[in-house]
Length: 261
Ligand SMILES: C[S@@+](CC[C@H](N)C(=O)[O-])C[C@H]1O[C@@H](n2cnc3c(N)ncnc32)[C@H](O)[C@@H]1O
Image 1: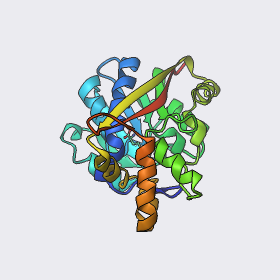
Image 2 (image 1 turned 90 degrees about the vertical axis):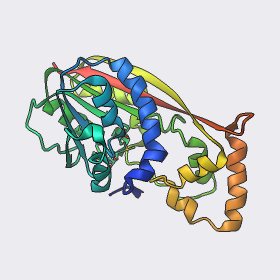
Image 3 (image 1 turned 90 degrees about the horizontal axis):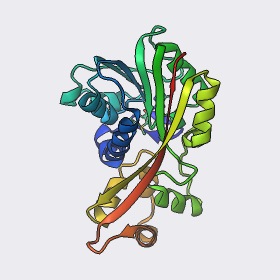
C-alpha cells in the first residue's frame, strides 16, 4: 500500500523501524489516557498491530477492531498471538465501514498525518463513537523536528533528494490537533507531549534499521556506493553516539483527546 509514495508493504521491516518507537510512544500515551477497562475500541491505521498489541496488554478492552488500508500490515497484525481476538479489516480513516455509535474509544496512533483530509478522519471517529466516548490520537511532530529519524530525513532533503512526505505533515502539531478536535465539536479537549528515546546497539544497527523505512529506505538503497560512504559519515557525525558506541535517538509526538458530547 502506498501513501504518497510511502509504502507500508512490509510488516516485519516496519516493526523494527517504527513498531519499536510506536510501542515506546504508545506506552506514554496510554499512561496519560488512562482508559477504563472493558471498553469497545477502534484502532484506526492499526498497521502491523504494534500499538494494538499494547492496547490489549494494558487496557483490557472488551472488543477491539483495527482498520488499515495496507493488507501487508494487517497480515502481520493477524500473526500476533495477543491479537487473536481482534477484528481487522482493510479500510480508510475517511470512510469508516462501521455504523454510528459503535465504539467507546477511537484512536489514531501515528496516523493522522497520513490522512489526506484529517478533519474528515476526525469527523468519522466522532460518528462511530458513542456519546460520552473518547476520540483520541497521537502523532509525531514532524515539522517541529519530532520525527525520530529527523536527522536522516533533513539531511536527505538538504541534498535535494525527493523524500516522500505524508499528505498532512502539519497534523502532528499540537495546536493543529487541538483545532481539529475543537472543530469536530469534541469536549473536554486535552493535549499531551510525548518524548521518547531509543538506543541502537551501534551505527550498523541504526543503519540496517533505517533501510527498512517506508519513506526513506528506497532512497538510501538507490544511492550510488561512493556517495553512500560519505553520506553515512555525515549521518554518523550528526547522531548522538555514547561512549559504548550506541546510537541514542529521541522522538517527540503530541497526543490529543476529547469527549463526544
Ligand atoms: C506510521 S504507521 C502507524 C501504524 C500503527 N498505528 C502504529 O502505531 O504502529 C501509519 C499507518 O497508517 C496507515 N494509513 C495510511 N493512510 C491511511 C488512511 N487514509 N486511513 C487509515 N490508515 C492509513 C498506513 O497503512 C500505516 O499502517
